[in-house]
Image (tube, rainbow over all chains, first blue to last red; front, side, top):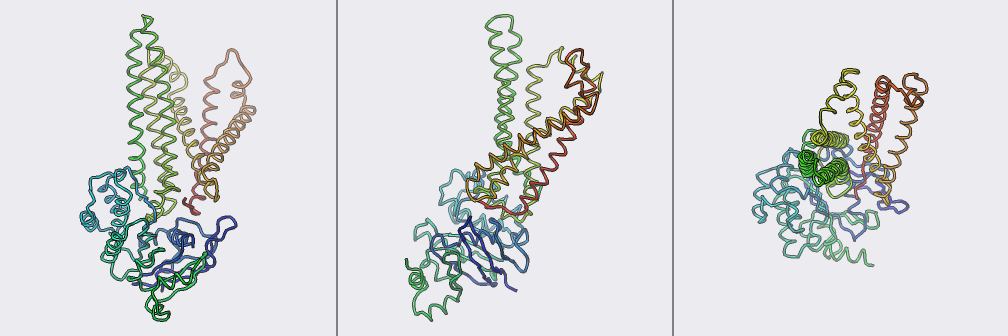
Length: 231
Length: 257
């Protein structure tokens, strides 16, 4: 059984179809790159998987069950925006996560917070946007989840920090679990990908193993993407 | 999970409301103290100003409590923090219930503070005697019935706001504007229906009918008893229906911004 299976998924805003008949399978133990231009439908797809948007039709199954509180207990999701209660202190949000997520590793979170030079006594509203994003990454990666979904984790981050974030992700996600990274910054992440999913205008254009695709096209994923979706 | 959600909601709401509670009580105490100096013109002016300020503080506390609970619902259901709340391993109906419980508790606390403030400013022997007379004639339940009406009216306001937001956010555009319009329209239409039902009941009941027809030598206690019972039952019915409508719509799913 696939970890996540999406069948004939459709979503539209008024007359504009954002997702068109999307079919997708996510298997256990692999790192997927959900790659597409801005506005291709990546975030909409991720939001539906995380039950943040209603779908028009189709099915989204996590371990064979429709998404809901069961899937949320096993999926660790990093949105593209800052979403924490800014009136809380860092230590309070760590406590919050440990109260709600049974798979949350409090000690790991505290260690990562220290490693990333974040002040555990600081109020979130007094942290810069970059600091808040780091904190969110720490919280998401401190869960022992079966599936991690990271929506644009490198957006708005300088190249040096991108590598640091990728290393943090790679060294902290649970062995045997899967990871979906949505981004348009392909060159930065292609070294870590097992599978790639190209999405454009709400349609899945290609799903393939990253190495097979590189061999077949004799070029990097980034180059293949640029060729495929040239404006 | 419900208990945890309610705990965090109350903490967020009450941390802010504590400022209003403190101001309300301090102004009420100052108004009470100034009532001892009304024998001079300046003292009387000061008392009148502080009394008016205290009344403004009561209104402000109520309105701010209402705004705060509705803001919490909006933030957690559709704004940035919804990305956290809707990805917690919690049923959506539990999230909805937590908002309703924390809202009712918050409104209740604000009403208690307003009552305390009111008693600090206005409680005197005349008021004590009037309360005693009412309790002697009709029993303590008439006061409890009145308190229940106020709590149900507050709950009614909260639910109108929450359902307005849920329905407003079903559409793709102008969600907040639609939420406000639906909430206000629902509030006034349902209040109109409630008034109409009370009036129709009054037409059929001779005791209650005197409230609408007789203007002199009116014995209001018995009709008022009945009126309170009818109003409370109707409010309870409306609030229950609104609660289930909101729960059903919210459980169908949300579209975050």
